[in-house]
Figure 1 (cartoon, rainbow, N blue to C red):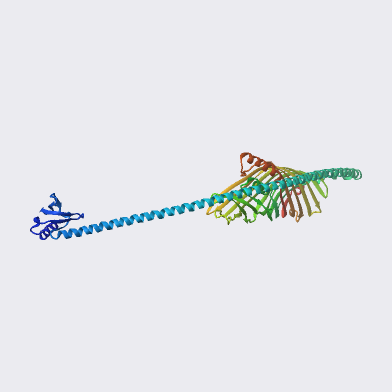
Figure 2: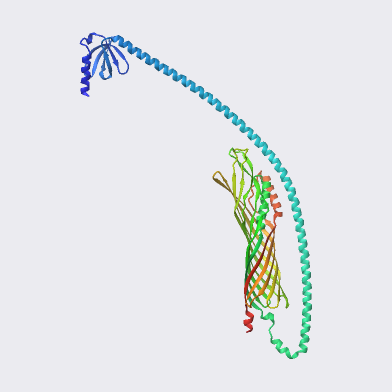
Length: 546
């Protein structure tokens, strides 16, 4: 750094003439100033300068650009022209920037006005769409009211027909009971006559064959000797129709009409036969017969539906959109029962035997479907609507129990063949649960809605069964037969979560209306099957006689 200062001082000494203090000098500063005056004195790092006004000051050499001693006026004029040209350029540049800023502001103002005009047009278009949507809703509401009135008339007519049919069935059942009572009286009278004739014949034989009396008194009666245990099993095909699922479909139809928030109308189910199996343990002693057994009957079922859904679209407008079933595969529904009963032989003939029955039944009915899909295509005229896919998960369970009374008629001919017929009336009580999960898929997401119906029932049941048995050997036999079960339901209480729109008063009135209307929806569960099977018997009476 010291060497650089020395070189700078020597260069100034070389450039500055000897008469430096006697001439006018121009000092050009690095900050752009030009000083005119006289250099009085200088040192290694600064100079002492006096301007034209006679004012003296010290100036550091590192802030000086150069010092001119000759022709200073021309150089000063040149520097001044350069300075004025630079200032002019800066003013022109500033003026240009101001024009560009003003032009930019005008473009932004114009663009803002265009956007405001466009926004105003969009708002007017949206208002027009909302007015059209409101008008459409009012028209649909009016149409819906007309359809509801028509449906209510049809339902009342259907309910009246069902009541008339039910009254007719009750009259026929009463007539049948009277005929059965009359037949029973005639059979009892005939049995009494046969017993009197038999007693008379025995008295005559006793008088004629007095020598055989000790022998006859020592012989045991066939009834006293009868002691047997049997077990039998069978497989077959069955057909089953559940009242529980049919009832819920009817309830859903009413809720669709009265709720106003969308819903579905279900078609009649498609059914297909499936497998069945049964097992029974039978114990016989003298005139008493005890039975414990069970059966399991399955069926395949599927149903389709049409309806509509209500939802807010992407523009937050409420949309009503049609829907229908796209996939409805068959699913399994099942009927299971176990029963225990005891009977007593009131009449025993060489060809047939009559036994009244007292019993107790437990019945389970179940079903589950997780494969049915509905779709709802979006409205092509509404860009804010969307496509929906809805998967249904439905399940039901029904549990009934209660006593039964009935009659059994068994018949045998020769040593190989035997028939057994049973007719029982069941007095059952229980409850059913039906659940329905609706899982809707939209834009990669899913929304779930769950409904449930829980009802209590009083059930009048009828169970009819028959068997044809072939005794292959003394202990092994084969058989074929049938079973028919009919359960007639009557509602005791209704429970469920139906989504009803409107104010609290109208919702309450609608709920009461649904409960009264659904009384007529209670129907019958019917299960029927045909079996083939085999069995094994242990005859204890032979061992006791030996």
